[in-house]
Image (cartoon, rainbow, N blue to C red):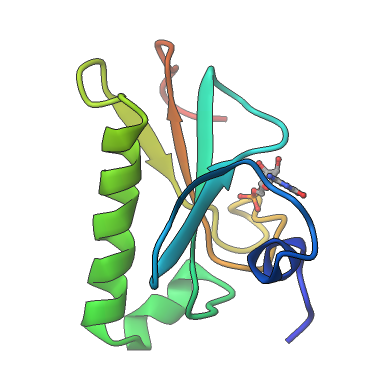
Length: 114
Ligand code: 5GP
């Protein structure tokens, strides 16, 4: 597995604007925000693509989504709402091959996405 920019952020080799960290996940600000609030959440147990979760321990999957919800709450996004995006593979426009959930909020988002 190729080392990605998110492996380096997790290892502390590249700085990030950390939002939240525990034994399961790291959450940090996206370097190129697409909304007033744009966070990324990555699982510490390395997964390249969301599609791998079909064979993962449901507890790991659940911990990840639980933390995504927790981070969105801590960012103050629950009242107005927010969007979770997980890009998977080429057609999904995944550019970093390390599973990550985008949390987007702080403005009215458009639908459908491009
Ligand atoms: P993807 O297109 O793979 O779903 O999203 C990758 C995201 O990672 C993009 O929104 C991009 O702005 C963000 N990103 C890429 N490199 C870095 C980095 O070095 N630091 C941070 N904080 N975000 C990054």
